[in-house]
Length: 347
Ligand code: PMV
Image (cartoon, rainbow, N blue to C red; front, side, top):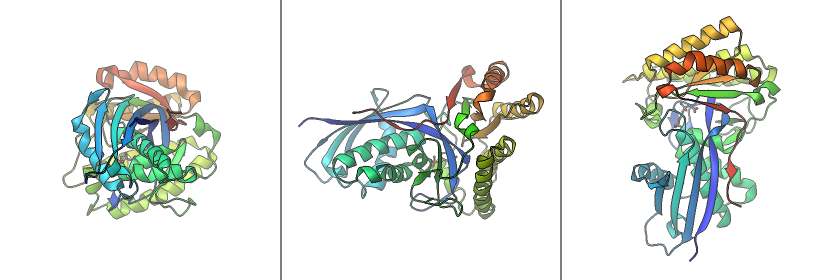
């Protein structure tokens, strides 16, 4: 029997209004919106063949950067357990999964978003070939699969601005899958850049699964979910008008709130590092003094994302080199841009 092959490249994304807290079945406690990135991506190839089902729910081998990676098995097994009903052919295929990231694993860049969306797109492609989904429903199907792997991954299935989670002001928004942001967006946002400052490269001190769990029974949970709902409505206004000052103020508030939620959990987690704080303060000073519209945001880690329009690129690049690089691990940072999206790499 010959091996079939599917291959996808899928980017990471950076949330502007954050998802933090979930209900069972990977249902978000609030709607979120993100920019899909471009250079920070995962490439995944699945070679597969049909086999006689032998009672096992799935058969796969996983290779990361060309090397067998047993450490990655548990996450992928969980993914296949959660998606078994959507992928009824799973017990009767054998797969070799090859994956590699364009950025360091567990760096705080959402490798789960790009990784799980790339795998979901591959599985969606196999489902397409097996007749389990049609072309029309393909992206939505892949977004559902991605969500079951890692919530934020549901948003990486589309390029541009993407919303996941039901919100009253966003028609078509849904808790089960992400959708492309449907409202008017001022042109400036399509030129946005994201520079990721790698303060820490290594294992995160709290997994996002654990982090979401900490919102159950959190003293401020209800207030946070209500605030996120309001922040989504406010974000719609700023995206519409291109008010970069208020857009950035909101993005920074969301990032700090995410970390405030972690710090005020029981137990509380502190994912900032001293260099994270140095960077945040420098960014604010630079913005005020140089009048450059650059704002920071954070994921659940120590690294800092700088968001700015293309018109500020030169000034921000110089600022990063001269004043921020020293706070990055081994001086490392990544310049990326928004507007990327997943790409099928096979014919
Ligand atoms: O997709 P998860 O379960 O790893 O959650 C990630 C959540 C944040 O990245 C912190 C915020 C977001 O909306 O992406």
